[in-house]
Image 1 (cartoon, helix red, strand yellow):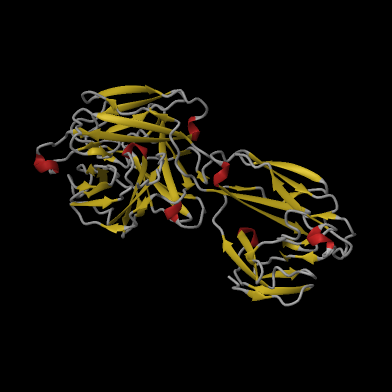
Image 2: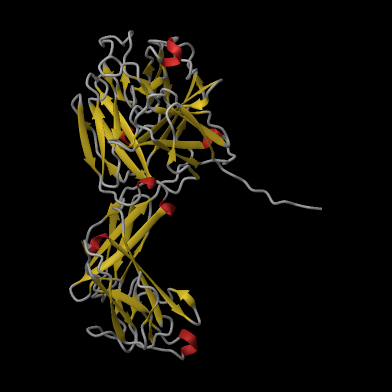
Length: 514
């Protein structure tokens, strides 16, 4: 941040030293002016020449505004035009931005050429942040005459009166944007468009509502008929029961060990999972002794392009695979989704976070088999996925990350002890059916930010501590609070973070007093 820099009289260049290093292609530059008459402004940003009608003809051919040019890894140059009176002071701020959702790279444009760039981000274009820069042999990376300018009788060196210079972007949609270079331009030999998209959850494209599953050990097929590609779907599943309310207790399934509930529920199979996702249906399975998911609700969003997509990646059993996303920025802006794929279950989240089977494993499996997968060690450059040793459900995994709009509620990282319940008061006062909730765990040891044993699980005899009760879950989501429970022997949830996005349509009525 240069702070406010006095430029002095017009027709002068000023070089500012920022010394940020790295690659200037990762920079986003913001320039503002300040004057006594206009305050903080961007009047005639990039430069303009007044014509015969401006200010009643009294300022014909005046050259006003400021532009920046010659951006390098250590400096940037400003030029205040000859008769300018809007920018006696200028402030330059530079962000080394996280990776954009779309980056056109440097695109060559001929003078008087329009080119449509296809980004296919999707979502709502009103939520995009668009940055355009130019590049030329004489001015380097620049924004000279940004948006376009017509020269008057005192053109810049190398140009002629009435030359039409600069470039602009137009016609932004959820799939493309058009750039145009003006006919006599010499400053935008190449242009670069970058777009950042922060997703704000909307009403889902499919919502099953609350569906009664009946007794356990049953599969229910839900028809959504969304069509398109399942690779574009974000699936969210919630449970509801009379005691725990809306919850994700034992999400994906868990088998209880000898110490759970005082040993009174040993080998019970709890929770539910979804599998066999196609572009018309999804299957939900409630496990035989479950008491937490008598009702489930499936929501599916047809998502905009993720900021990172690993694609379907084969992963061997008992293997950890790091994925490098290099998104940068704050991981608190991320929404992480992990799905599995297997030939038997299709796209699924069976035993999400990991499960050790008890004495009643599914057909073809054995007691104490360790199945499922989890992610851990999330930072702003990478994330690691681990597939458990006897797993058959996650032959391939896929990680997608979206940058999110600011949540309506963020608990921040909150310390939570073992065998402890913590109630977070979010006070959003909306129907909880309109909430999208994300809970992350933080392990101060080796796992970092993670969803290891998400929903809770009990270890089998393969570990040195069989029947250990690990993981965490959330329950009792209502219009103003949600409760998180860390299980008694857990080592992976020293802190929890809960974020909630509210997509309900709020209507505020005026208060009328007599």
